[in-house]
Image (cartoon, rainbow, N blue to C red; front, side):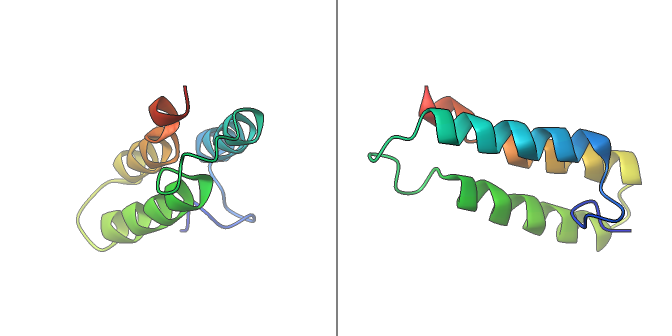
Length: 77
């Protein structure tokens, strides 16, 4: 099960993704060239792939993907 596909997306992952998108759109800062929405999206995808390739539970993968979506927000303050 993919946490990132629209058909099977976790509500927590969806909310984190939408929150990150709103956050970056509201605080668009041209100084941020690395800590971007796209970097968060790439990180979330890689975290999900890593979690599913190991013995992580779906809940552990979900928590890690949510954290991946939100980890850059401190750089946008």
